[in-house]
Length: 449
Image (cartoon, rainbow, N blue to C red; front, side, top):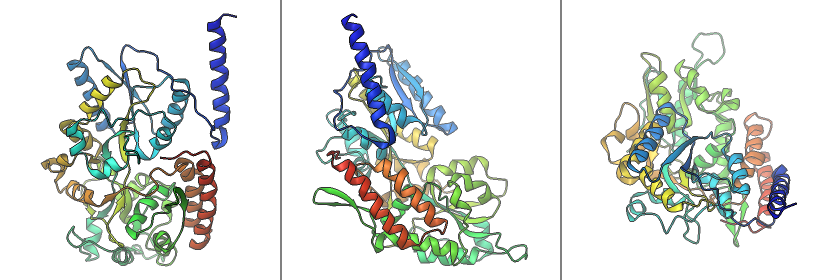
């Protein structure tokens, strides 16, 4: 057997061992040296856009770049949110990775701590550094100052409401200067809950909330109550469920099972899946849905349907947790400078605005928020843009094993809770115990942000 064949055979065997050891959430105690990706004629850009206008915008920007830079062409590769994590893990382990990765801040943490992502801090321009919102940089900046990605969009949770149902119930919606508290929202939801056909059963609920795989929504809204779930104690992460972490859980359970002011239909649905029933008048408010969902209302709302966006609800504060959509470069890329030039192009002021508008998300750049197109009233951009000042990064950013924690601990337990199979205290205790088992396993390997 030749040396080349032996090396190839060894690499195949080694990759197989890595994949086997990854089964069931297991991690290696060591990581392979960074491999250099094969040199390609074009830079590969994996994009996760999925809304029609966003797809058009990203593809148009790639075409514009290619026209301006014949010496540094970019190939657009369509990815999906459901499969990208496994795709990237395989690519990092084999060295066959794209040059530019579109993903989100909470998910790239695992790749960063394992040394798979390039530190972008030496390459980011002064213009980008100064204009991107601080909260966005906080989502990708490690304690040593390195940057695992460039933020381009911020996720913002909003509340949609049916203006006609509010008018019928004589409820005046709050404005930015006079926001509702969560108690105010609950009172309004009670008033908006009705048996409209007189058959003795509720058929119009004050609120609906997509609670399938709800951990992200719950954590981000809990920030306003002063809760964090995750804490750093003596240099390590732990999960503690105190009063601040359980207040929102108790409120939602009361609305579903005491007041019946929030429908339980959301237990098996995401927020967007509830939009058709929102159109049908079954829910007067949709709570905790992404700001990007407004596009579906603009495009699909039936004639005569009038909707609006409520300002962030106040608990202890109006803060809401956020994650960012990011652009990263693998360490294995052989063309990092060219990749960074393309990232700077995508995230310049004009293009960040185009991407944000097409995806109906908050742009990362502060200067974009002052543009007239982000201040319009009929489509909720004024509220979404003004609410950006309340966005915050949760303490869980950097927590080792966070992705596994969401899928194996938080989502299943919260599903049991909201299905009324657990009390809030039972759920809190289980979250504490099971979370810290996951955390200790990762931290014993010194996987730290």
